[in-house]
Image (tube, rainbow, N blue to C red; front, top):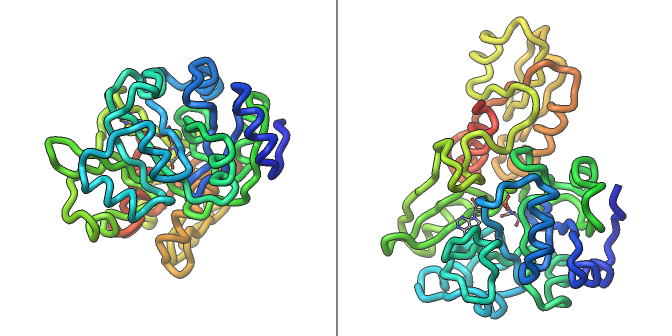
Length: 318
Ligand code: TXA
Ligand code: MG
């Protein structure tokens, strides 16, 4: 188990010495290392068992700091940064020389974000270096939204967990960049499409749904619990899987059936933000319960519902 606490001085000291520290963000917990120290960055890949072709997001305290590591040539991305940082938005930007290519998996663009969490912002201001941080889970598994999730799976591989409580959004950041002069969304996430479009107009979805390993965050089988997970319409799912002990993750109405061993309601009042907040926690609880399989209702395809369904479909894809 890793030491857990709210000591940003200790966290800063460890990070400056090349160690790994789990950090809270409003989206999910990150597994952080000094992005300018290649040996430290290497240990992130080792701890997560993550392939090197999957690039990392760097975390900075504000837009001024981001400009030290990436170019903001396009005024639309600048506007997005000004509007939504700190917040669940990652920008893909042309990288500056100082960022090691290990961080970007050799790509010319670096993913940058300013997380909206007071402890982590305090830490970032203290250390004055960018932190490379993927979600703090073993590669392919569900992302962590509280310190206990991190400790359970990676506790023996990291030096400290900065305890910032439960992540307020619960879904990873939305990834946006410019491709062919068009504003594109490469990963749906905690900042809704509709919200982004209010600032820069219509955006294009370029979400990779293949099993092509070029962008593993976008791999079809990702964010997955260990048990078989099936997603769709609850009634139909229950009919199809009537012979199995089932954990049911639902949204609003709660179905009943003899073979249901536990029910997790993402939001009794059908609030999509509340559902986002509960999603990963419930996937973990369902995975750890006595059921044989997990069934999950797909949500209305609007607001954060789009990103939630994206995660669920990937998690269910085997
Ligand atoms: O909310 C989040 O974004 C969380 C917190 C910790 O900040 N981080 C996170 O990181 O979700 P991770 O590594 O689990 O997912 C980041 C994904 C990668 O899998 C990759 O698809 C994409 O971001 N990415 C990162 N750098 C990229 C780059 N240079 N070009 C293209 N895609 C990139
Ligand atoms: Mg991840």
